[in-house]
Length: 216
Image (tube, rainbow, N blue to C red; front, side):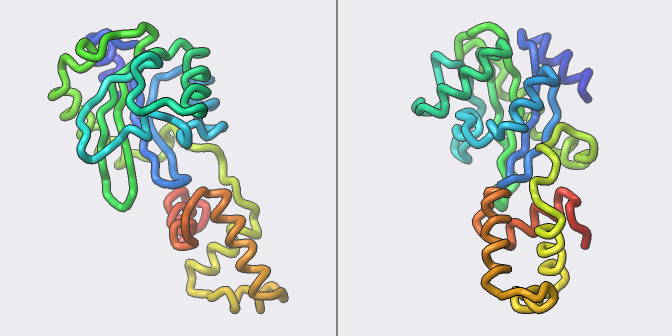
């Protein structure tokens, strides 16, 4: 698959390809971007300020982008993102949104070290949309070993708490097991949600299960 995508990118005048799926703290993908950029992007959670991801919209098809033609109105954090990308000579691209439901957003991007005109980037939009849908299914079926977000940001105690919740324990039950207060457990869950950048505890448990940090 990687060789096929590399050939497709090169045939259409691009240097790199990347597939990225983002759902709260659960981020994974497939790319031939320089390894250093991949680690930098994930370790610094640049997906949280990435204007290309922000531009993904159910009503929007494939779109071109560059620092001079951003896909959304530029804010301070977007400029910081483009500055990071420019350091790795990533200057423009075309992105194809993919929606998987339940808040999951994915996109396939072909990027270039040159600043291209949007019309040139979108010259073969139909085939890139079809390719994007195919890649989405391929990568999701073969998630293990793909480009993924940093190692688990939770402590063993926090993971144990999520595991107990997964297996039916209540906050009060966990407080008894830990010989602590229910409020202390709730405070720990608040910290877990903040670390994973999720809205509620159900999402935190879902991320932990999907990332195989805890087991069913």
